[in-house]
Each structure stands twice: as structure tokens, then as C-alpha cells.
Amino acid sequence: MKKYTEVTVNIALDFTSWAVNCSIEEAKELAINSLTNNIEDHLIINIDEESLGNEIEEEA
Image 1 (tube, rainbow, N blue to C red):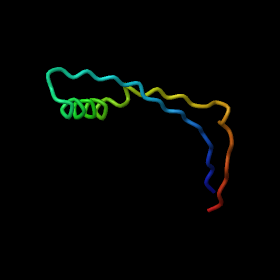
Image 2: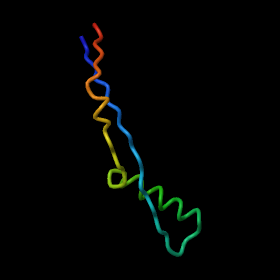
Image 3: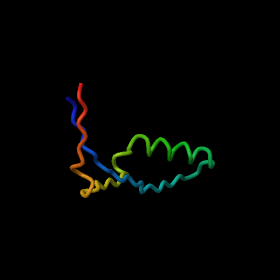
């Protein structure tokens, strides 16, 4: 039997990037690369404590 617990996670992103001496396309590429390589540094994660504990059991 599998037991599932419901968890609500709200994820927001706080990201600002500055690019110097490059085109808009280059700036976009730099921002995407920076965000992709450092995503954990920019995420703000909030777990909704009120939603914890709702459980569903599934028989195998």
C-alpha cells in the first residue's frame, strides 16, 4: 500500500540580472544562463503548513 501526503509549496522567483556592453539578445542569454546555473540561489520556497497531513492511501 502506498501512502501519499499532500503538501502545498508556493515558489516565487526573485531575479534581476545586469548585463554590460552587450545586445538585448546577449543580455537575455546571459540572464537565462545565470538563472539556470544558479536557480537554487534565487528561489523563495514557502511550504503551506496548513495543508500538511492530508493523506491518501492507495492499495497495491
